[in-house]
Length: 153
Image 1 (cartoon, rainbow, N blue to C red):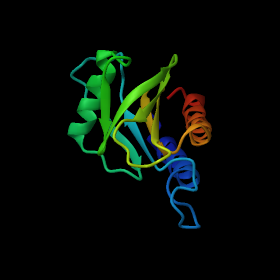
Image 2 (spheres, rainbow, N blue to C red):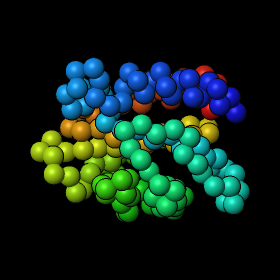
Image 3 (cartoon, rainbow, N blue to C red):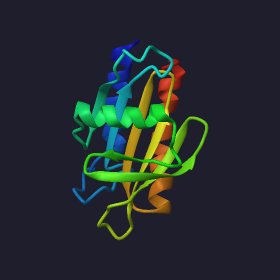
Image 4 (cartoon, rainbow, N blue to C red):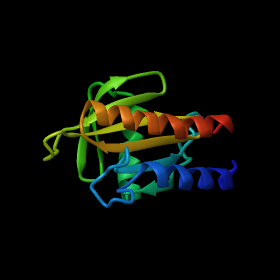
């Protein structure tokens, strides 16, 4: 695992895509938060997933364990998951990624999540808004995953 590459790529990507940006207005960047989880879904169950990087959110290991259990149960269409204070329900499932919407948001336009899996990581990207915001978030997620894919990560 080339951790130096992962950290450099994350820092550059997160600075351009996660948070408030230079204007200070709420979330002019595509994502409000992102979390990179180091995991090997084909590895033995005794290997624990770890938080490799996080920006805009502070996730604790217990939350991570519950989320990884959700992924391993593979009942994306019938169960919900929790990240931070929000509960999400999956709205669309694709080969190596899925989208979800927040069930307990107080924001008029809503909140969403994109979860994408690579060979060695799961990227969770959180955004505020609806269709347009989801499209911008997907572009941002795809850019980072492409970088990881170049190194077979």
